[in-house]
Image 1 (tube, rainbow, N blue to C red):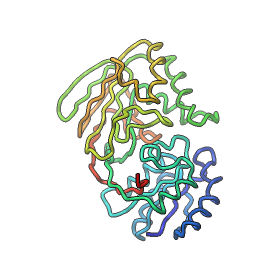
Image 2: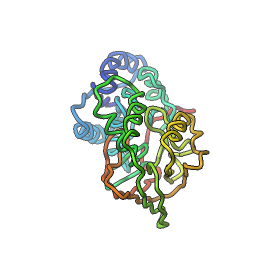
Image 3: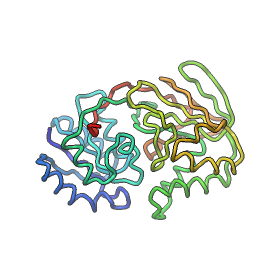
Image 4: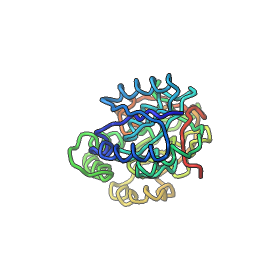
Length: 290
Protein backbone atom coordinates (compact mmCIF):
# COMPACT_ATOMS: atom_id res chain seq x y z
CA UNK A 1 0.00 0.00 0.00
CA UNK A 2 1.28 3.52 -0.74
CA UNK A 3 1.84 5.87 2.19
CA UNK A 4 0.28 9.20 3.06
CA UNK A 5 2.60 11.05 5.47
CA UNK A 6 0.46 13.25 7.70
CA UNK A 7 3.04 15.60 9.18
CA UNK A 8 2.68 18.13 11.98
CA UNK A 9 5.53 20.56 11.14
CA UNK A 10 5.47 22.15 14.59
CA UNK A 11 5.60 18.87 16.54
CA UNK A 12 8.49 18.54 18.98
CA UNK A 13 9.36 22.21 18.61
CA UNK A 14 9.92 21.74 14.87
CA UNK A 15 11.57 18.31 15.14
CA UNK A 16 9.18 16.74 12.63
CA UNK A 17 9.71 19.44 10.02
CA UNK A 18 13.49 19.25 10.47
CA UNK A 19 13.51 15.47 9.99
CA UNK A 20 11.11 15.37 7.03
CA UNK A 21 13.70 15.70 4.21
CA UNK A 22 15.75 12.82 5.68
CA UNK A 23 12.61 10.75 6.15
CA UNK A 24 11.66 11.27 2.51
CA UNK A 25 15.12 10.16 1.41
CA UNK A 26 14.88 7.06 3.60
CA UNK A 27 11.46 6.13 2.22
CA UNK A 28 12.77 6.43 -1.33
CA UNK A 29 15.75 4.25 -0.41
CA UNK A 30 13.28 1.63 0.86
CA UNK A 31 11.43 1.82 -2.46
CA UNK A 32 8.20 3.06 -0.89
CA UNK A 33 5.62 5.15 -2.71
CA UNK A 34 4.42 8.09 -0.63
CA UNK A 35 2.99 11.58 -0.60
CA UNK A 36 3.25 14.25 2.09
CA UNK A 37 0.47 16.29 3.68
CA UNK A 38 1.25 18.94 6.29
CA UNK A 39 -1.37 19.45 9.00
CA UNK A 40 -2.67 22.74 10.29
CA UNK A 41 -4.73 21.28 13.16
CA UNK A 42 -5.91 17.97 14.60
CA UNK A 43 -9.21 18.35 12.77
CA UNK A 44 -7.25 18.82 9.54
CA UNK A 45 -5.25 15.68 10.38
CA UNK A 46 -8.48 13.72 10.84
CA UNK A 47 -9.67 14.89 7.43
CA UNK A 48 -6.37 13.82 5.86
CA UNK A 49 -6.66 10.42 7.54
CA UNK A 50 -10.14 9.92 6.08
CA UNK A 51 -8.84 10.84 2.65
CA UNK A 52 -5.94 8.39 2.97
CA UNK A 53 -8.38 5.66 4.02
CA UNK A 54 -10.54 6.33 0.95
CA UNK A 55 -7.46 6.05 -1.29
CA UNK A 56 -6.31 2.76 0.35
CA UNK A 57 -3.13 4.38 1.65
CA UNK A 58 -1.35 3.68 4.92
CA UNK A 59 -1.98 6.82 6.98
CA UNK A 60 1.39 7.60 8.58
CA UNK A 61 1.27 10.03 11.50
CA UNK A 62 4.52 11.96 11.80
CA UNK A 63 4.33 14.07 14.94
CA UNK A 64 3.44 13.62 18.58
CA UNK A 65 1.01 11.35 20.38
CA UNK A 66 -1.84 13.80 19.86
CA UNK A 67 -1.49 13.50 16.09
CA UNK A 68 -1.16 9.70 16.27
CA UNK A 69 -4.31 9.50 18.38
CA UNK A 70 -6.26 11.76 16.02
CA UNK A 71 -5.33 9.67 12.97
CA UNK A 72 -6.08 6.44 14.84
CA UNK A 73 -9.51 7.80 15.70
CA UNK A 74 -10.38 7.88 11.99
CA UNK A 75 -8.93 4.45 11.18
CA UNK A 76 -10.24 2.28 14.00
CA UNK A 77 -12.86 -0.33 13.11
CA UNK A 78 -12.03 0.05 9.39
CA UNK A 79 -9.69 -1.70 6.93
CA UNK A 80 -7.24 1.19 7.30
CA UNK A 81 -3.67 0.80 8.53
CA UNK A 82 -1.80 3.25 10.77
CA UNK A 83 1.92 3.96 10.44
CA UNK A 84 3.92 5.97 12.99
CA UNK A 85 7.02 8.14 12.59
CA UNK A 86 7.93 9.70 15.96
CA UNK A 87 8.28 13.45 15.70
CA UNK A 88 6.84 14.85 18.89
CA UNK A 89 7.84 15.43 22.49
CA UNK A 90 6.75 12.21 24.19
CA UNK A 91 6.26 9.60 21.42
CA UNK A 92 4.87 7.14 23.97
CA UNK A 93 2.77 5.11 21.56
CA UNK A 94 5.80 4.42 19.36
CA UNK A 95 7.80 3.53 22.48
CA UNK A 96 5.16 0.98 23.53
CA UNK A 97 5.21 -0.74 20.13
CA UNK A 98 9.01 -0.76 19.91
CA UNK A 99 9.15 1.65 16.97
CA UNK A 100 12.56 3.43 16.85
CA UNK A 101 12.57 6.90 18.37
CA UNK A 102 14.48 8.32 15.38
CA UNK A 103 11.94 8.94 12.59
CA UNK A 104 14.49 8.03 9.91
CA UNK A 105 15.20 4.69 11.59
CA UNK A 106 11.45 4.19 12.04
CA UNK A 107 11.04 4.15 8.26
CA UNK A 108 12.24 0.54 8.38
CA UNK A 109 9.04 -0.35 10.23
CA UNK A 110 6.99 1.12 7.40
CA UNK A 111 9.02 -0.90 4.90
CA UNK A 112 9.26 -4.24 6.67
CA UNK A 113 6.98 -4.16 9.70
CA UNK A 114 4.05 -6.42 10.46
CA UNK A 115 0.42 -5.40 10.81
CA UNK A 116 -0.89 -5.85 14.36
CA UNK A 117 -4.51 -5.55 15.46
CA UNK A 118 -4.46 -3.67 18.77
CA UNK A 119 -7.00 -2.40 21.28
CA UNK A 120 -8.06 1.22 21.50
CA UNK A 121 -10.02 3.03 24.21
CA UNK A 122 -13.11 5.15 23.70
CA UNK A 123 -14.32 7.91 26.00
CA UNK A 124 -17.46 9.91 25.25
CA UNK A 125 -17.21 8.95 21.57
CA UNK A 126 -13.52 9.86 21.21
CA UNK A 127 -10.68 7.40 20.67
CA UNK A 128 -7.35 7.37 22.47
CA UNK A 129 -4.36 5.05 22.41
CA UNK A 130 -2.41 5.73 25.60
CA UNK A 131 -3.76 6.79 28.99
CA UNK A 132 -6.75 8.92 29.98
CA UNK A 133 -6.04 10.39 33.39
CA UNK A 134 -7.57 13.03 35.62
CA UNK A 135 -6.77 14.69 38.93
CA UNK A 136 -3.25 15.93 39.52
CA UNK A 137 -2.48 14.72 35.99
CA UNK A 138 -5.08 17.19 34.63
CA UNK A 139 -3.22 20.09 36.23
CA UNK A 140 0.17 18.77 35.07
CA UNK A 141 -1.04 18.45 31.46
CA UNK A 142 -2.48 21.97 31.50
CA UNK A 143 0.84 23.37 32.69
CA UNK A 144 2.82 21.29 30.18
CA UNK A 145 0.64 22.42 27.27
CA UNK A 146 0.76 26.09 28.22
CA UNK A 147 4.44 26.56 29.04
CA UNK A 148 6.73 28.18 26.49
CA UNK A 149 9.84 26.70 28.05
CA UNK A 150 11.76 24.31 25.79
CA UNK A 151 12.04 21.41 28.20
CA UNK A 152 11.39 18.37 26.00
CA UNK A 153 10.08 15.42 28.03
CA UNK A 154 11.18 17.22 31.23
CA UNK A 155 8.13 19.42 30.78
CA UNK A 156 6.07 16.78 32.62
CA UNK A 157 8.39 16.84 35.63
CA UNK A 158 8.25 20.63 35.58
CA UNK A 159 4.44 20.47 35.43
CA UNK A 160 4.29 18.02 38.32
CA UNK A 161 6.45 20.16 40.60
CA UNK A 162 4.34 23.22 39.88
CA UNK A 163 1.02 21.38 40.23
CA UNK A 164 1.95 19.87 43.60
CA UNK A 165 2.40 23.25 45.26
CA UNK A 166 -1.34 23.90 45.51
CA UNK A 167 -2.65 20.32 45.19
CA UNK A 168 -5.17 18.87 47.63
CA UNK A 169 -6.49 15.29 47.38
CA UNK A 170 -9.81 14.59 45.69
CA UNK A 171 -12.49 12.07 46.58
CA UNK A 172 -13.00 9.63 43.71
CA UNK A 173 -15.87 7.38 42.69
CA UNK A 174 -14.90 4.65 40.20
CA UNK A 175 -17.14 1.97 38.67
CA UNK A 176 -15.25 -1.01 37.19
CA UNK A 177 -17.41 -3.30 35.05
CA UNK A 178 -20.37 -2.36 37.25
CA UNK A 179 -18.54 -2.68 40.60
CA UNK A 180 -18.25 0.67 42.49
CA UNK A 181 -15.39 1.75 44.72
CA UNK A 182 -14.29 5.03 46.31
CA UNK A 183 -10.98 6.43 47.54
CA UNK A 184 -9.25 9.72 48.33
CA UNK A 185 -6.14 10.54 46.37
CA UNK A 186 -4.24 12.05 43.50
CA UNK A 187 -5.60 10.57 40.30
CA UNK A 188 -7.41 7.96 38.26
CA UNK A 189 -5.73 6.78 35.07
CA UNK A 190 -7.38 4.46 32.55
CA UNK A 191 -4.62 2.85 30.52
CA UNK A 192 -4.54 1.21 27.11
CA UNK A 193 -0.79 1.27 26.35
CA UNK A 194 0.19 2.08 29.95
CA UNK A 195 2.89 4.60 28.93
CA UNK A 196 2.72 8.40 29.00
CA UNK A 197 4.62 11.57 29.88
CA UNK A 198 7.67 10.80 27.73
CA UNK A 199 8.38 7.28 29.01
CA UNK A 200 6.57 7.01 32.33
CA UNK A 201 5.50 3.36 32.68
CA UNK A 202 2.40 4.07 34.69
CA UNK A 203 1.05 0.56 34.13
CA UNK A 204 4.07 -1.47 33.04
CA UNK A 205 2.15 -4.68 32.41
CA UNK A 206 -0.60 -3.13 30.29
CA UNK A 207 -1.20 -4.93 27.01
CA UNK A 208 -2.75 -3.54 23.83
CA UNK A 209 -3.92 -7.00 22.85
CA UNK A 210 -5.74 -8.34 25.92
CA UNK A 211 -9.11 -6.62 25.47
CA UNK A 212 -8.89 -4.93 28.87
CA UNK A 213 -7.96 -1.56 30.36
CA UNK A 214 -5.53 -1.15 33.25
CA UNK A 215 -6.88 1.32 35.81
CA UNK A 216 -4.32 2.96 38.10
CA UNK A 217 -5.66 4.49 41.32
CA UNK A 218 -3.18 6.67 43.22
CA UNK A 219 -4.30 7.18 46.81
CA UNK A 220 -3.50 10.07 49.12
CA UNK A 221 -0.03 10.35 50.66
CA UNK A 222 2.31 13.13 51.65
CA UNK A 223 3.65 15.26 48.82
CA UNK A 224 7.17 14.24 49.84
CA UNK A 225 6.29 10.56 49.45
CA UNK A 226 4.64 11.25 46.09
CA UNK A 227 7.79 12.99 44.85
CA UNK A 228 10.04 10.19 46.09
CA UNK A 229 7.89 7.71 44.19
CA UNK A 230 7.90 9.74 40.97
CA UNK A 231 11.26 8.52 39.53
CA UNK A 232 10.11 4.94 40.02
CA UNK A 233 7.32 5.52 37.47
CA UNK A 234 9.92 5.49 34.68
CA UNK A 235 10.89 1.96 35.75
CA UNK A 236 7.36 0.85 36.54
CA UNK A 237 8.36 -0.12 40.08
CA UNK A 238 6.00 2.44 41.67
CA UNK A 239 3.15 -0.08 41.41
CA UNK A 240 4.62 -1.89 44.44
CA UNK A 241 3.92 1.14 46.64
CA UNK A 242 0.83 0.54 48.83
CA UNK A 243 -0.68 3.86 47.71
CA UNK A 244 -0.91 2.59 44.11
CA UNK A 245 -3.58 0.12 43.02
CA UNK A 246 -3.85 -1.39 39.54
CA UNK A 247 -7.06 -3.14 38.48
CA UNK A 248 -8.37 -4.28 35.10
CA UNK A 249 -11.75 -3.75 33.49
CA UNK A 250 -13.47 -3.48 30.13
CA UNK A 251 -15.53 -0.42 31.07
CA UNK A 252 -14.70 2.28 33.61
CA UNK A 253 -16.70 5.26 34.83
CA UNK A 254 -14.99 7.77 37.11
CA UNK A 255 -15.75 11.09 38.76
CA UNK A 256 -14.35 13.33 41.49
CA UNK A 257 -15.69 15.70 44.12
CA UNK A 258 -14.60 18.69 42.05
CA UNK A 259 -14.29 19.38 38.29
CA UNK A 260 -11.45 17.82 36.33
CA UNK A 261 -10.69 17.42 32.64
CA UNK A 262 -9.35 14.01 31.63
CA UNK A 263 -6.40 14.18 29.24
CA UNK A 264 -5.21 11.51 26.81
CA UNK A 265 -2.46 11.36 24.19
CA UNK A 266 -1.29 14.79 25.34
CA UNK A 267 -4.59 16.65 24.98
CA UNK A 268 -7.86 17.21 26.89
CA UNK A 269 -10.39 14.56 25.93
CA UNK A 270 -13.38 14.63 28.33
CA UNK A 271 -14.85 16.41 31.33
CA UNK A 272 -15.60 14.25 34.35
CA UNK A 273 -17.66 12.19 34.93
CA UNK A 274 -16.45 10.09 32.02
CA UNK A 275 -16.95 6.52 30.87
CA UNK A 276 -14.17 4.65 29.07
CA UNK A 277 -14.56 1.33 27.29
CA UNK A 278 -12.09 -0.82 25.42
CA UNK A 279 -12.53 -1.67 21.73
CA UNK A 280 -10.59 -4.94 21.33
CA UNK A 281 -8.39 -5.41 18.25
CA UNK A 282 -10.03 -2.38 16.63
CA UNK A 283 -6.95 -0.75 15.05
CA UNK A 284 -4.48 -2.11 12.51
CA UNK A 285 -1.01 -0.64 12.93
CA UNK A 286 2.43 -1.28 11.42
CA UNK A 287 4.85 -2.43 14.11
CA UNK A 288 8.35 -3.98 14.22
CA UNK A 289 8.39 -7.69 13.45
CA UNK A 290 9.90 -8.59 16.83
